[in-house]
Each structure stands twice: as C-alpha cells, then as structure tokens.
Amino acid sequence: MQLIELGVHRAGVTRKNTSQTLAASTRKGFVHESPRAQTIEWFTPPEVFQALGLHFDLDVCSPGAGKSCVPADRHYTIHDDGLTSPWYGTVWCNPPYGNATRIWLRKLAEHGDGIALVFNRTDTAWFQETAATADVICFTKGRIPFIDGRTNRPAGSPGTGSALIGYGPTAQQAIQQSGLGLCFQPAPLQ
Image (cartoon, rainbow, N blue to C red; front, side, top):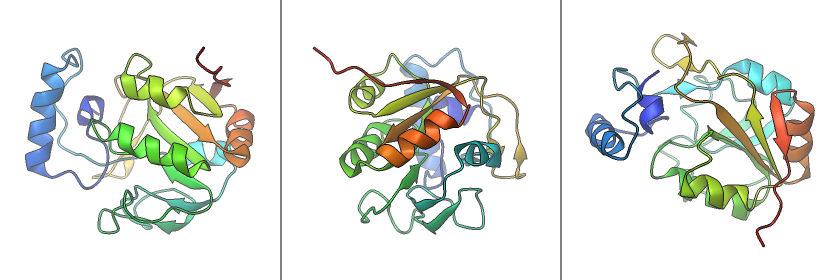
C-alpha cells in the first residue's frame, strides 16, 4: 500500500499525475515510505462502516456505487466532480490524498455534516486547520487495512494511522460510539 502513503488515494488521479505526485511527495519528506505500489485506488473496508452504524446521504469521492463499501444513497465519482457538485445531507469523504486533501476538508467543514477519513498527519497544515474546526476527531486504533481496488482484498498495513474527522451531531455521535479509536473534541485555538 505504498502510493496511498505518498498522497495518492482515490480514483481520478492519472498515471501522469501519479508520477508527478510520487516525485513531489518524495521531495516533501515522505522518503521513509515505500513508493512501490502500482494502484491508486484504495477503498475503506466495510468494518469501518459497520462500526459507525451510519448510512450516508452522499459519498463525495467515490470510485462508483458498485466498487466500494460506502453505505450511501448517492455516490459522486470523478465524472461528477465532488468538489463542484452540491453536497447535501450527511456525507462520507475519503478524499484524494495529497495537496487536494485540504480543499476537500474545507468543503466538508463548510458543509458541516459528515465524516472524513484521512491519514493521521497531525503535523501538517491541513490537519491543523481541519482539527481547529471539527466537532470530533477519532484517531483509529491500529492501521486500517484498506482494500486494494485491483483485487478487492485487504492489502496489508498502510505506512501510518488514520483519523476520522466529524462535523455535525449525527457524525459526532456515530464516531464517538464506533469504538474505532480515541475520540477528542478539539478546543478552540486561543
């Protein structure tokens, strides 16, 4: 699960962009993480959704309704462009990892109702910005065994842990009752 560690996560990233991201990520300090993977699609395992016990209105970064385990009424794919399409209801956002993560998380914060699954990168500017606006943050216990989009099977452990970031009372309650890890309500910056 190497490219996920370098900032490329979901559908919609071309091979050209993957090479550029790989080179850029290596320059930016992720050199301790291996760049060997061939796929760019990694899906959240169903156990995460079972623990959350939540049905979403919208999956804003979906590879497609038949390809992922996200329990949602509607799935925006790369063709729908989830960043420019309207969001409604409680959303699931497993954004493309890399430079665009901040943009997706800002839109989720503005929307105010949903859950994002991101890498636990507490030292990054995007994580600090997001944490300051979230209603709840859950640092997952253990690393999530994401599903390889090529084989549809778990593909080992990623290079870092994950965090669930929630906005709104529905998301907050689902995360806090999930048992997926330690949950915190961020204190406002002084």
